[in-house]
Image (cartoon, rainbow, N blue to C red; front, side, top):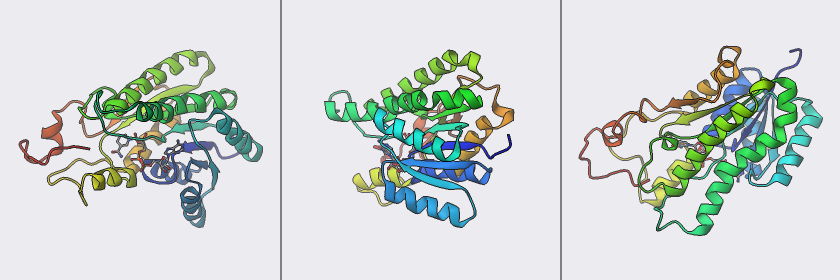
Length: 262
Ligand SMILES: NC(=O)c1ccc[n+]([C@@H]2O[C@H](COP(=O)([O-])OP(=O)(O)OC[C@H]3O[C@@H](n4cnc5c(N)ncnc54)[C@H](O)[C@@H]3O)[C@@H](O)[C@H]2O)c1
């Protein structure tokens, strides 16, 4: 490839998305930071370009097909190709089947599940042309449900189904589709959720937090030539949380009364 590959990362203004965008930019990709918060994304892109990396911002609500169409057209106009699509933008409301109201359900499924589908649909001609790759940011909760994460867990389980279905649909096109599943990651979004529950920091005893840089490393692997035989997979980056008893894994003391309320 004569020119640097192009990567699109949604929800790239902060947290895991920014970690992935930074990792891809450092690995010589031209990176488009797509986020509903254009100002935060612009601030992030400015920091990347100040470091000599290639980044630009496109404001996007991932739940809008029209906005996807416009965003992809803008990027293709400037960079002419798309090699990597990272569907990372997500919301994580807490709630049970009873306490979750319809608006929260609709919003969660729109951002976490419909958004990746719309992004794939909009990028597909360009991804086919580059024999590119799609990486969806899921969660350990896609396969290991946890009480109180009803709409979120459903959306991430759906995203795993979408990942596998897209992988099989595109198998003859040389386009791969995988899911990276983070464990618990210290991000601005997670901090807000903790603060909503009156916590200024993580619960005492919490350990094995994953970092955005570690998620970026997994994305880079899947996007690299060495990862291109991996298809339709879920790659957990969660210290084994999906295998372990959550309480034993997360807390030093299994009987810690400050349980994860999320
Ligand atoms: N933080 C964790 O512990 C954790 C664990 C597992 C999975 N994840 C997943 O990782 C992803 C990122 O999580 P995070 O903790 O970095 O989140 P975050 O809340 O810190 O950041 C999310 C970003 O997405 C953007 N965004 C939200 N809605 C959007 C929309 N409709 N269109 C475009 N952008 C939108 C926000 O503006 C923000 O910049 C999510 O999909 C989340 O479910 C996070």
